[in-house]
Image (cartoon, rainbow, N blue to C red; front, side, top):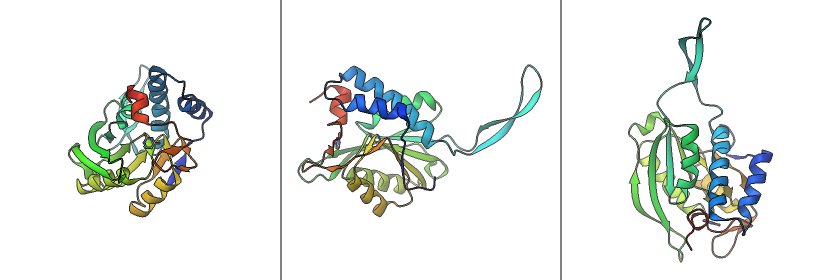
Length: 210
Ligand code: URA
């Protein structure tokens, strides 16, 4: 991927995202839409994966058929909201390895606090896709990518549903080598660090908490 930021403007994604933004959308529908969008975004973020060929035999004849090359990619969910994107992506890439980064946001300082970290081995040999629905201040995303780099990852991409300009700028400054794929670049952050117009708290909306 060459661009630092890719906004996927596919009509299906945009339509589903509008439904997700609506306050009246139920938890069950929100979760289902997130699953669907995550697959469409996964399709986009993996479009340039390396392929090699494998000799196979169809019922008609032998051929050199394209298959994914290299080590299985690693999907890293930034807890807890990242799990909403992870589920759908795993349906599309079932052999992916999975890791988790547990960070919560201190609501006063807006700074990330780490409470869990577990990732697959050989991180330096995998394409690593970190997922978190909301790129807001960028503080937790930057911290998560710092940890992934410390674990050896060198080829990292970041997938989110919504991004705020502030978060994109923060990521570009801290991790210019990490391309971001999102369904929307929203307007701004409000004084509480929420994305505007956004969709509220993604974790609360997908898990039905408050
Ligand atoms: N996290 C969320 O869930 N929503 C926002 O708007 C910002 C951060």
